[in-house]
Length: 166
Length: 105
Image (cartoon, rainbow over all chains, first blue to last red; front, side, top):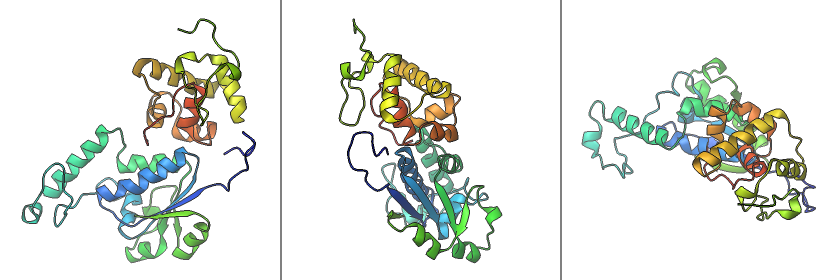
């Protein structure tokens, strides 16, 4: 923000670091929405995708994230799916399709498009090196524009930043 | 209906964040004045966005979301952040005399 626009003292520029560790459809949106809101306010933003969060920036997985219907205590307000029903074939796919439709109705993009918007907006996206090694992934498996980083390097970037863990 | 349109920032009411209180009091000259206050130099591409935002406001009663700007105005996400680095939808709305956009996309 302008230091001289109104004569007030310049605050140090904000920086936000988000760690995305979950790969379910409903848990992919919080880090993406937070990162996008931060970028829309001109805040320097870094998102570190680790463990299942890697699915969000994995080209092969990002279009097919699902919401859990087994043992999920949060399946409301639509209806409560008892775990025994939730394990039947097609239930997770159906719940995921419904959720995608609701997200679309709100004007939010699907995950793959959202990730691209974030990259275009200048958010820095990183795949966690350790998780990638564990899942046998390469940089080429990640969406173009994502880098590979280890935890220590990420923490250097996070110095002075506000950190959100999802 | 404004009978004598304001031409300088002093004639216009802004809220604490710098957004015009009355969007109907906006005229194009104000965009230039607000841009100068924000430290921005307006180009044709900025004007494309400002005009798009005004048209959307006239059609829908509110400032367009960043997503609708990037999908429908011809200016994509990368360019929006290049034109308005400190916050594209907010800055475009300020320049167009519109209220702060409330959405997060």
